[in-house]
Amino acid sequence: MASDYDDFIIQELIQDMEEGVMYIAPDGRIRFINPAALEILERSEEDLYGKTFAKAFFGNKGSDMFNQTILDAIYDPDKNHDNVVYYFVGERLKQLHVMSSYMRHEGKKNGVIIVFSDITNLAEMRLEHIKQITFLLNSIVKSFSTAIDARSPYNANHTKNMAKMGQAFLQWLDETDNTRKMTDSRKREFLMSIWLHDVGKLVIPLEIMDKSNRLGDKMRAIEDRFVKIKLLQRIEMLEGNITEEDYNKRIGLLDETLEVIHRLNEEGIRNESDEKYYAFIEHQKYVDENGKKCSLMTEDELECLAIKRGTLTDKERNIIRNHVVFTKRILDEVRFPDEYKMVPVWASMHHELLNGNGYPEGVSGSDIPWEVRLLTVLDVFESLTATDRPYKVPMPAFKAFAILDKMVEEGEIDEKILSLFKESGAWKVITV
Image (cartoon, rainbow, N blue to C red; front, top):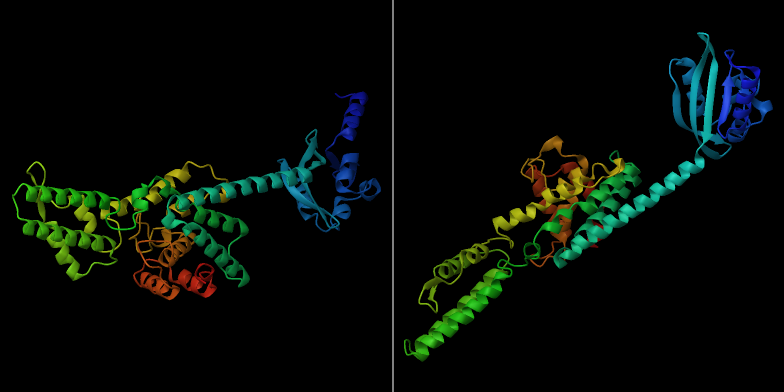
């Protein structure tokens, strides 16, 4: 059993504690409150001591969370209560860590003991730390994204333009009080998804990323081959195997053929007459320096030249498509804070389509989040209107929207999101 001296020591310790301590007796009156508690609550002992808890605190606007923690201990005496609450002193806001528990003595309820501390400065420091970390994270992400775009001069502004449109669209949702408007936390998560949606392109070979025509770097090998063939023809003439007239005809045909190859290589969309030229080139042969009959172009070169639209073969297009797979793999290795936990999911799904014909997983319908559907609209619109793509002429907005409307008809993208995007005018930030 504790002696009077022990009780004295305990009371002195409590008096000197930095934490506030308050005791509410079974009759609901405050029977003890130490100096730290008075300082934290910015109240006087006369205000509190001997008063009922209700009379002392219920009239204090802004202390509802504090009051509730105490009431929880009273009405739920079988467990301890531990909360971080807001407590207002006039117009100033404090943040308190409050622990409360019902006391028992010899099996009887003996009142509530409350221990609390002012963590306002700590909370502010933590908030400032979080802001600094968030700023650093955003800076790294934007620098990373800039590096991705800068890796290819033909994709220099893609992500930046998407982010501009995304920010403008979110602001419009706020200004119009649209039911789809996002919380600040959701906005940050969505915008980070934009900045990182193409991170997988870091592992895509540049010769495919930067392929501005059908043959790409294969054109140099073809030109060198034609030079060699011309030299072989000249040798044939000098050795008397062909006449000068035959030599000139062959050289003329080679020049015309190479000119056609150049045109087919750069041309936008192949037409029927191009098919005839291609068939002619496909079957052309020459005799090399070892007397071996060889095709004028290799199978790989012919496959590239056969592309009817765009600059990529099916194999190259699949490699490009894999950037979303690599995006997922890369971002899954990052330990994102809870506030950004959806970034890897949203960023890696931006090529999925509502009808299931997208990639990489063919996800469809309600399995595609609203944020991803918006990201897809931004991505397609920017790609269609981009001015830095060498393989296509930039589209005016009305033509881009016509294609997006067609995608709606085919069940690929969200009609309501596209309608909101049009109405918002967010697209004007990159087209006007």
